[in-house]
Image (cartoon, rainbow, N blue to C red):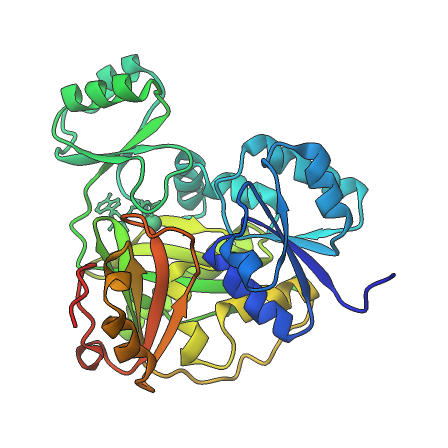
Length: 375
Ligand SMILES: Nc1ncnc2c1ncn2[C@@H]1O[C@H](COP(=O)(O)OP(=O)(O)O)[C@@H](O)[C@H]1O
Ligand SMILES: [Mg+2]
């Protein structure tokens, strides 16, 4: 039977797919997710689940046949799958937002940093390593310690090492049995900020004002909205995000991470999807980043004329939060806190298990910095 409803497929089925499903279901969209995972967080919130490898093109095609539009909650998808989607899009009547080419740029640090540079955005000083011989070309005045990162598929600080010398780098490359890396000088930033930007298929753009991000062990810990930075920096961050959206001819939601150094902004990376630092939008304002993702896919442009409340987002990472039920109830029964748990089957160290939004200032939130939850 032909469905009354618009059907959206999502590649990936974790917490971002789950929160998208929750937003999209409310406006009647039917959501299906595709990933190698079973009983995923997205499926537990009502998405139809397809389980398969990203390179199982037969199954992927069956999944796509049932969708009016496709989007992503995860950028670390094999490049061959993205090529398959680019090809599929030219033959079939399906909207794929963002364009898989934007995902290919975002998952590859070299392409991403070169793209930032091409469009005139500042980036951290970086050096490309594609073989051991390349290390001999490292400039003599290169500053150590620096950060070695895998070129592809890094997330939540995975695939990153602080290195003090060329010897350190050689050791790691040998252990990794891969030479596809970049070396980055450490930026002595004052703050990290991010902007969630949205571009619709008619070219209209909306940027949420910047949030300020605190990382613990290279994983986002706390996001504070609004960022405590000057008005001119806020405007610059929004200009940079707008420039990125336009230059990519992007349709959908993205998150741009930046380092603040005096009155300059260095672009670190962008995520071609809703971003963890944008979860404040679920309670701070009229439409969340997930609502916006749904609107871009449906092809409707909402009114951008809405106001924001100061909000602080704290991630729940690993198992400590779950070990004491008292912590959960403390937050659950306090009306200033909004709690979101992702129903992941296992609480592993460093794994994002949920988040809490607090309506108010960081000081009043009393959120601990780090993952050590105490009552
Ligand atoms: N060049 C750098 N200088 C200083 N801090 C950095 C640098 N690169 C990464 N970091 C820190 O590590 C965090 C994670 O690195 P990032 O490049 O964003 O990778 P991931 O894909 O894991 O999020 C950043 O948010 C920042 O706190
Ligand atoms: Mg990052």
